[in-house]
Length: 353
View 1 (cartoon, rainbow, N blue to C red):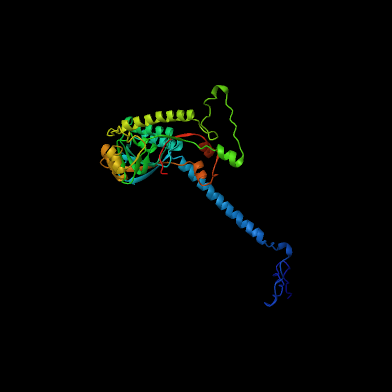
View 2 (view 1 turned 90 degrees about the vertical axis):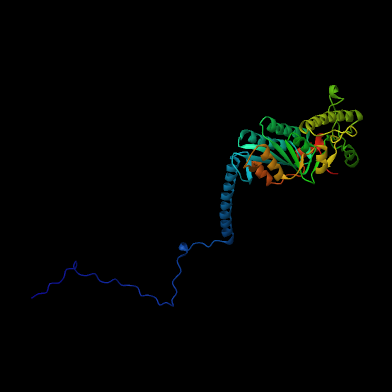
């Protein structure tokens, strides 16, 4: 009987020959050079880290600027609650400090509009610590303080700090009541004009002479008050006359707001520029009572008939540009500073020598 051989198609495949495994002590051959990634130099690694760091910083800066824009869009005033109470019984506290200038009056204008447009604010307390400042700026603030009391029919109480003299007293005069601390310096009801004269210094030290030519029609008065010419007696007399008229307006402001003042015939005190401590200021009628900020807010609550007042301190909110400027130091003397130094200024200002 013949055996049938399996066909090649049905035969099982033969096992493939495998390469012998090298012993463990034989090192594997390195990969070819075209498959080996190039090693980064130290400079490239450093640049990569710097790029990542700058990217993260840019994200943080964008977040910060977006936050400032969001804050700036929320309103013109910041509000800090000093004492909690009913939300419809707000006593608004506002600080005025430093030299009173155009910026001070502009900031107070924002506060005034906030009080005017907010019916929940029932009374205002001004915390003043200033030696005064510009005539026009002081008069603008005075007008708004008077309007809060008379037109808006909301009590105004002043709390004086370490000093509230001259222009600072000017803006305090229309208040319902004035409080001063025991060591407060106040008064100084008067006006001054000042400007530097540098012509001798320029000629003697630097050999510089400033030439001023005026049109014939204005030769007598045009720019007679400037830092490059010594004023003659006629110019001094004209300036004194302007100061006299401003002083008379200051007197009318004080006498209209403070009914208890008695003017002495001998020396015209207390309207003669003299300064007073709190106790003496009460005696002459410039101040009503001695006390601190809490006393002023308590009086404001009483005048406005508020049983549960909420004391809120307001301040002008800085805009984005102002925040950036505040973090960037500017020049010591810029064009605006030079203009202030060279232009004559009429000031309601007191400061110790």
